[in-house]
Length: 226
Image (cartoon, rainbow, N blue to C red; front, top):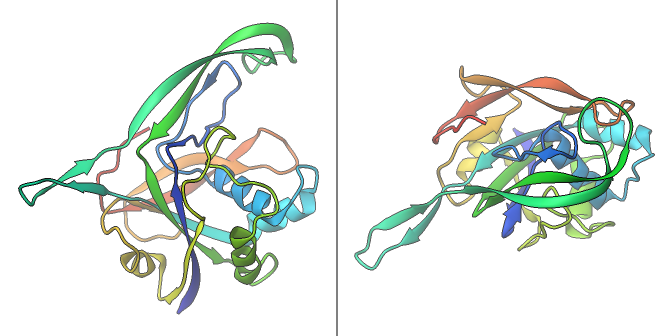
């Protein structure tokens, strides 16, 4: 049996940025590892320059994300599935890098930023090694965050508290079966199926804005490619 901390990510908008610069800011279809570590780091009060604490957080926390299936009841007793919508917003930004080449541009540039609407996620976290930060510390932090957490971008506030439950089970799949709503694709760092995808969202703490890859195993639901 393992111990799992369950978080709920609910809000009118979410944005889980992929590796890019300011010209185009795409969002993944579900929370990235870098985004979730940033959210946990904010709750723990870890500053951007505290690389030792950031690395410890990255090393000691495993995670699985379920894209929750939401359904709205109809008058005839049936229900309708509410699908997530991805939309692009237009901005102009001054003093930003437009691409991978060169230093900051001090000219005003056009940017396009993607957001997820009507999206809800359930996240299961576990300790990889028992080292700090422990699940107890993470639970206290998400209940009483040091910095204000947000859903990928500052413009994406939470609609409910992050903490949902603490559950002991044999694995993350069995844990998520106990958390409503039922249904939805699970993306886990542990091998829960033979269906796998490669993503590049592991932050390299000593190289800002650089990311390594990882394998994610998918189970259930309707996986939608990026």
